[in-house]
Length: 184
Image 1 (cartoon, rainbow, N blue to C red):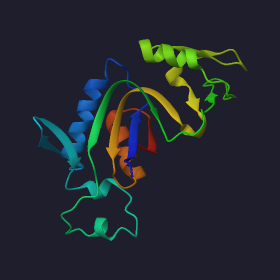
Image 2 (image 1 turned 45 degrees about the vertical axis):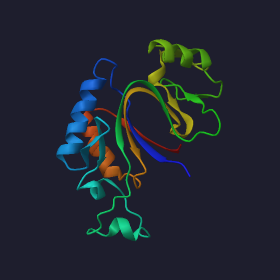
Image 3 (image 1 turned 120 degrees about the horizontal axis):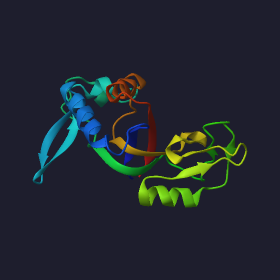
Image 4 (image 1 turned 180 degrees about the vertical axis):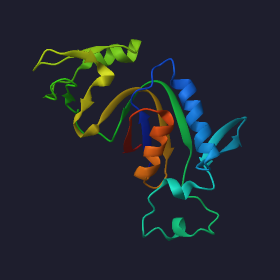
């Protein structure tokens, strides 16, 4: 089986501001009724709130999800991920890095830069086409397959998140976001 995970990644949050932004956004999600805190094993987990249906694009075939009176929620936990993380979609092959300056794609895997970013949170990558160097998080990847970031929101086993919801979350953060989907 597995878990279907959607992650909304803040592409611009710095390491220093990620925790505060994550807390503020979690507060917004709770206040808007998208999630609710639930005591669990001495801690708290966040599950679907009373307005979870407003955050997703319900499939026409999902009778249970469309039934407002249903007490069951087809949603799992929502976790705020704070800290240096490589967020990715369900990749089959390594994506090519796209230069933020000239937009050329380089299929060579930048292993040393990725390792340095994982170890220190800082790494530059140079473009083979134009020689421009930029921090690894500024690069894009073919198929929007990767993001090097410090803040993300993982929605486990939720129906597909609606673009209006992810845009509102991005406005709450005040940053660009990207949605990653994968089965784990």
